[in-house]
Image (cartoon, rainbow, N blue to C red; front, side, top):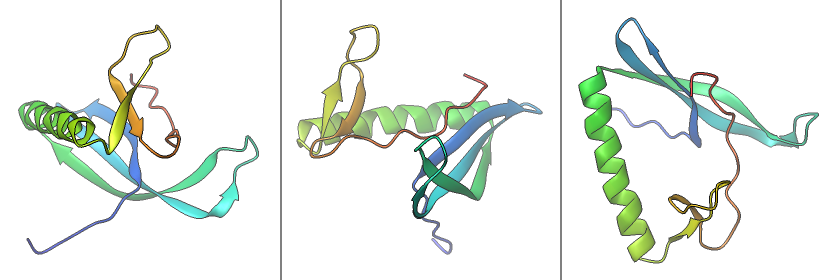
Length: 102
């Protein structure tokens, strides 16, 4: 592996031109925006075909299961009362900006 990029999360996921685009973001500074939300700056973009995205999604689901099993994250109740999302076991997860595409 020649290139390593650190990002605090994914700011937006979109489908454009038949390709899935994941915009990576990083926290900037310790100050929040006027709505008291963390501020993020673009860090990079991953572009892949839908088939590659689906394989990646499956791999991420498997990793989430491993993290839950190891006690590093715990299932969190969703807005509809269902479980399935995860958050850090010790602290509340920081909400990333929501994509208008989903």
